[in-house]
Length: 132
Image 1: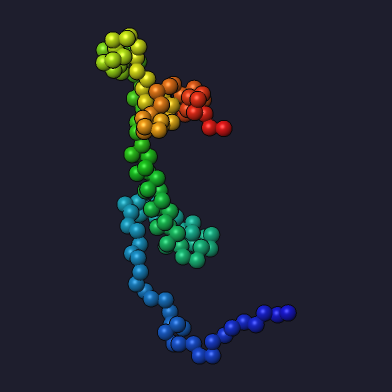
Image 2 (image 1 turned 30 degrees about the vertical axis):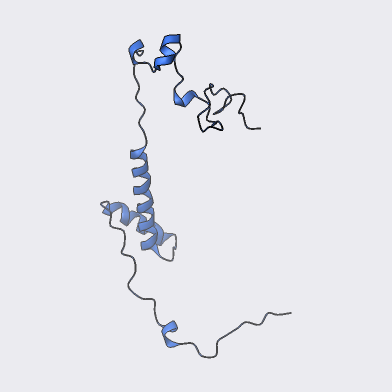
């Protein structure tokens, strides 16, 4: 059975007019050559809106570069840290044992809301809190 297509009897003239010329402004980037290159690639590939495609690609590139610049940097040292530079708590110093850095501790939290004090041996958790 063929489906009947609904067609309005009278279409308003404002629906038949062209798209409005206003809208979001094109993304202005400092790299004019890059935008022209992306615009040419979008036109060659037959994209229906090459300007928008080029602007979106530049915007995505700028966002990824900003995220990359905001990432924490790794500090590489050649010397071993001195004993005075290691992390120790006052109570642990009396007993002679160092406190685990937060990155090496189990990520589970107790019912009181404190972080588990055991070392993370199975991924991010200790053997007691390993998810099954």
